[in-house]
Image (tube, rainbow, N blue to C red):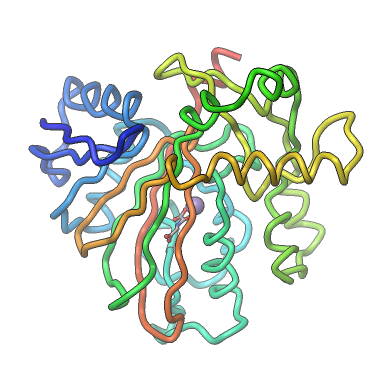
Amino acid sequence: MKFTPLHEHFVAQLDGIDLRTPPTPEAVREVEQGMDRYGVLVIRGQPLTEEEQLAFTRCFGPLDLGFGRVKKKGGPRRLTHDELGDISNVDVDGKIAAPGSNKVVSNIANQLWHADSSFQRPRARYSMLHAVVLPSRGGETEFCDARAAYDALDDETKARLEGLEAEHFALHSRIMLGDTEYTQEQLALLPPVWWPIVQTHAGSGRKHLFIGAHARAIRDMPLAEARMLLMDLLEHATRPEFVYRHTWQVGDLVIWDNRCILHRGRSYDLSTRRELRRSTTEDVELEVAA
Ligand code: OGA
Ligand code: MN
């Protein structure tokens, strides 16, 4: 395996691995070491079936269903496997989703900076996003290194953040986008959770911010102050020097570590087709350690 850095702080392209053949335990360890260091790995030229993507992902831990476990439960799906997130603007009938539909709102919610499944326990560890159909322009995905962003905070801010906990709620960003219709049953599946704003990344031993679009409050802080602080921190973390923009090619698989990396999709013409598939692992290691 060969890791080629693509950014000053994080992100590497990984060559010399075929994701269709099950990796040996040593190969899994090597990918994890690369992930611990780089936070994001770009693997090109991997035309994977749903099954192949899931088999590879399972080597890194139990699968996380995230938001999918609520919205799509019981309803018809475009993909065969419930464990895969259908990150597309395409309906079950194969047509481009109508403006204003749930599918489109999900697409747009993904365009806010976030960490996948930060609204639940266990949260997500790795997300693996695979490109199947792409629009001719736009629709890139951006990543930011919340470790480098933490390092760059001034000492006063670091001291202020010590011990603070943020509340993460799955529907916070969706409600903000006008998607408010949820049943009591759905709400019961999505109780908010609390996470420290500053954490130590298990893989690299480095401190990082843990924030994003799901964070809506800070414990023992008036709401307006809390929201402003969360917005200021997000603005800091996503300064251009901490951001890598990935321009997709069909067959790419990009893996990121949701514990220390934030991401967002970029806009594109929603009347043109974009289809990616996401598989995600649970951060069970941390749960055990905690
Ligand atoms: C995701 C996500 C962004 C994108 O799949 O978790 O946020 O660019 N995707 O599609
Ligand atoms: Mn996401």
